[in-house]
Image 1 (cartoon, rainbow, N blue to C red):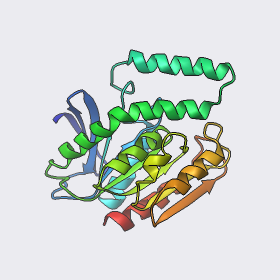
Image 2: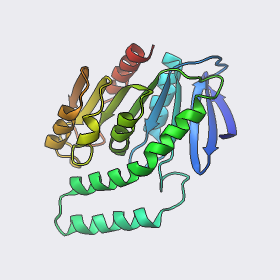
Image 3: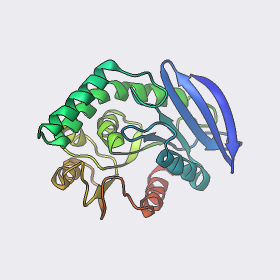
Length: 243
C-alpha cells in the first residue's frame, strides 16, 4: 500500500493511496492515533471514490463518529483504466434495453460479473488499511447503494470482519443467494418510485437477508433521490453496532 498524498480540512485527514492497481482514499480524524472502527464505502455506477455522496458520508462518519473511512475505484471507474470487456457488455446491454428487454436483470448480471473482481480486491484493501497505525484492526462496517449494493451484498456475505451494513437501491436478481448468507445487522434503503430497480425486486432482496436485525427504510422518490435524513440514520446505526 503506497500513500501518494495527504491533505486535511475541518479536522478530517484525507490520504490518497494505491494498492497494486487499485486507487483508493482513506479518511481519518486529523491527528488520530490507535485503532478505530472502519467503514468501507462502495460508490455508485458511473461514479468514483470521491463522488459527492461518498465524500458527504465519509466526512460525516469521520467528523461526528471518529471513524476511519475508505473508498476505492471499482474496475472501469474513476482512476482505473477502461475495461474493453466491461464496456462491451455495457454497450450490448444498452442495445438490449432499446430492443425491449427489462433493465433490472441486465444490471444484476453485470454487477455479479464485476463483484467477482471487487470482493477479493476489497478484502485486500481491508487487510492493508487495518495495518495502518491510526486505523488498526477495529470493527468494520459497509455502506453502499445501487452498484455499491450489487457489489456490497456478495462482499458482506464473504467478509467476516463486517459487523453491520447499510445497503439499498438493489434487487434480488443476482444477489439473493449471497443475501441469505448475511446475518449481520442491515439497514436497507428503497426508493418507492425507483425507475431502475423494480420495487418487488428490492423487497425480495430485503426478505432474503438472514439477519435477525434488519430494517427497511422506504422513501418516496426515484432512484437517486435518497433523502438526506438517511445519512443521520446511518450514523446512528453504525455508532450502535461498531462502538
